Every structure is written in C-alpha cells, then in structure tokens.
Image (cartoon, rainbow over all chains, first blue to last red; front, side, top):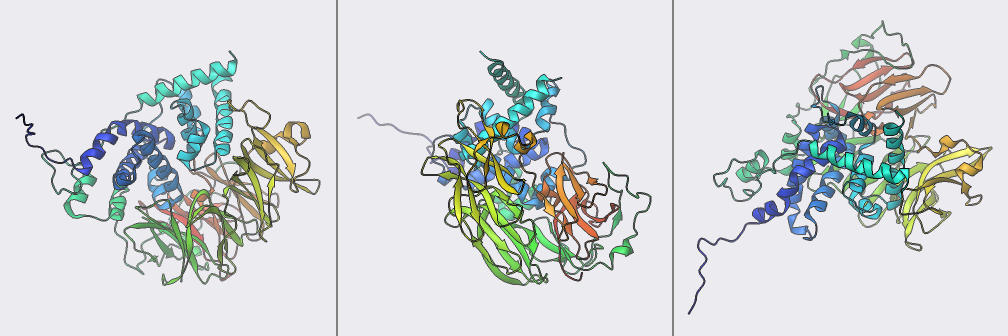
Length: 166
Length: 423
C-alpha cells in the first residue's frame, strides 16, 4: 500500500500566508505612496503602516486582488492621515531635509506632478499606469466616480499644459 | 489618432517609467507576528515589537512617527520663539517682532494636537495641559463651542481609520458628551460662512451623508443619508451642495440640501456630475458643476455647466457668458468672525485676504498643504490669528503680519483652535 508521508509538515501560519500574498506588492506600494505624497520617507512610513493594518485585517480580505487591496489601504491611510493632522504634520510637513523623490531622469514630469494634489496624483497613476476605470478608482479612494472624472480631467489638462507649453 | 491620444499614451509611459525608478523597499517581516519567535530571521522593528509583548497598536503608531512621551499635565513646556514676518504679497512691518510678553495678555486657550493627543496652552505658549492620553487612537481638536465652554474633539482609533468619534470635552479635559460617529473622508470639517456650524461629509454609523455640528447649541446630527462628497456651503449659509450617487439613474449627481432638511437634485442626468462652486450673478444663486453629459464618456471629458439654484437655466458655462474662472473648484476658506479676513490656501501657503482692501498676508507652508493643515483660528479680540506652520503653532499679529512661534522646537504641534472667549 502506497503511503504518502510529508516530512516536517507544519501548518502554515496566518502570517506566512499573508506575507506570501502581499509581500510581492510591497515595493510597488512604497513607490506609489512616495509619488502620491511626494516624500520618500513618508511613503515608506505609510507603506509600513498600511502593511501592518493589512495584516490585522487579513481575515477580512476577500482573496481577489491583494495588490489593489493593499494599495487601497495605503492610499486611504495617506489621505486619512492628512486629516489626522497630528500625524500629518509629522509625515508630511515637519521635515526640514526631505530626501528627494523626484525622478532625476524626467524632472519635468516630476515638477509637474509636484504641483498636483495628492488625491489627483493617486487617481492619475491608478488610471494611466494601472488602467483602473473611474468607477474602480472611486471605490478604492472612497469618492464618487464623478469626482474621479473631474480630478482626471483637470489633472490631465494641467499636465498637458505643463508638459507641452514649454 | 488624436493629439490627446498621443499625449495620454506618452503620459502613461512617462509615469510608469518614473514610478519604476522610485526606490521601493523590502516587505517587513511579519511572519513572526504572534509567534514570539524570529525564526532566525532579522526581525523587522514593528513585527518584533508586536511579537515581543503585544504592544498596543497605538504605541506602534506613535513610534512610527517618532512620537514622544507627553509632558505632565499642567507643565509649561513651550517657549515663544520669535520668527520672521509674513512673506509674499505684502511688505509687513517686519523689523518689529513682538516680544513674547505681549502674548501673555491675550484671552482664551489654544487647543491643539501634539503626537496624537489634544492639549491646550495659553496664547504665549505657557501652561501646556494634556487633555487626552490615548495610545490606541489619535485625537485632534475640531472647534470650541461658540461660548467657549466646551471643546469638540475628533478621535480616530488606530485600528479603524474609517470611523471617528466626535466628543465634547470641558476645558480641563473632563469628558462632557459623545456626539456621534462619523468618518469624514469625503469632506473634512467645513465651516459655514458665519462660522457657527461645521459640516462633515462621510460615513456614519449606518449611512453615508452630511453631518452638521452646531457650535452654538452643541447639537450634532445627520442631514443627508445619500452621500456627502465635496460639501459646498451656499454664500448665505442656508444650504449645502454636495455630490452623491443617485440610485434612480445610477450615476453621480449634485444634490442641494437646506438646513431645514429640504432637498433637491440639480439637473439629474445618467452621467457623472460633481459640484464645483456656488456663484451669485445679478442676485441669482447658481451652481457650477462638472458633468460628462453630452460627451464621449470613455474620455476624460467632463465640462463645466451652470444651473440656477432652483434647477432652472441649465447650460454649459462656456455658453453662459459667465466668467470662465467659475469652472475652478471653490477653494475652501475660513472667514474671521467679524468678516474682516478670509483665510485660504495659495500654492501651499496660507493666504489671509482682508475684505477691507488692505494688503494680503502670505505665510509659507509646504506643497499640498490645505486649509485643514494650516487650521487658521482667530483670537477672541480678532487681533491675532493662530495657525499651524512648518515650525509649529504660530501667532500672527493682525493686520501687519508679525509672527511668533509658540511651539517649542522639535515638536509636531498642529490643528490650533482658539477658545472664543474673553473678547
């Protein structure tokens, strides 16, 4: 009779399942948050915070799209933190020597992005880079699709002017 | 193929390339959480802390932001630091920096947030008193009631950033009353033009909507249950325009709700609409809003439209003969109680515009700062203004713009709210 024996089989922990699903998206989350909040240090802090919160909420994850889920937590955290100004001040406003985040290869784009509101940067990246629809972006950022449409329309008009009028 | 298509494609490629060049990072090692073991791997700071002793999430967050232990209640820790004067469009009487003692005679306490807890201090920075001391939540002051008897604070639990509790505190920190739960993600605290009410747009305990806090009565209640995005008070303060998802046509529309509860939908249409600003033209109140109606909705094609407040007269803003600048989204403002100053933001700075025609004052902030970050708040005698700047809480002497920093160096004080008493 054939038997299958699994050596050293130990049940996977909740943390290991979480790490396997989410860790591949961590570096991308840092990049995204860094551009959205225009601060490398704050991007890293927020990503760590989002990662920890995601772990706490892992039991509620629907298993569909870990990247979108992690980004939703991170972006909402970033915008929510801005309004919880005690942390906002520490994360966004009190640094005297910010580590530069602007892309040295495309400084024109970096400067143009710097002039956008963080919410608008986030919506633009989710649309132009990720390919999410306005409705999907609205759900992820917690705003109506109409607001996203308005943001994108104005943001692209602003960027078009900044990047083509020079 | 249009120029717009080419630009969109080029922009996408440049954004993708730029993001790829931002330095990412390695995922924190969370596999040890709850096990008490690092399994031979270098422990990530937070994971190790949690594993080591079940440290409260709040403390973790405090550590994340470099927080520090609070000074004991009643100890004065702040020393006024004379700083420069206003910059920008005005040449203030910069040579004279007021000496700190001139602040000691000012009335009212200044409530503020430090490291996630609410504190108060005298306008000269003395008598710092810690009112809240939570490790699992972050608090900030929202407003004082009109008579200065109680302070409204907003508390957000660290493990649930999507709900905030509004509560009343006595000036000494004694809890007075819990007002309700709101998650003001759609529209942060937005003052009515006369400053007597605050509207929040967000999720409540059951429905999303607009929540009103009456600073004269202390009453808090929900005004709408169908949404509350982009709150815009009408100039007379009698109604609020907002965006909501209209289930009858499965699209976002612009709603208008009166403080008496009357409600209407402005120019409903099964495309995406979003409010931009109220305007008054020839005595007629109108709403300017973005809409995708009559456009190719697969493009970024929203255009500004205008409609009378009663729903009549709908037309494209471009066809109306009105100022094209009405298409700009209304800038959130705060108006001084006497109507003499309008505070707004301009390119990341705080702009104080006098309605009487004298010079505008501009105080630097940082990119992306909004009116909620600066949190301008007038003194009871209306001769001074407190706001949160890059160096902490600043006191401005009006109208010349001389300025004093009352936060001690190295702390992250924010959200000053001046007690409206003693004028």
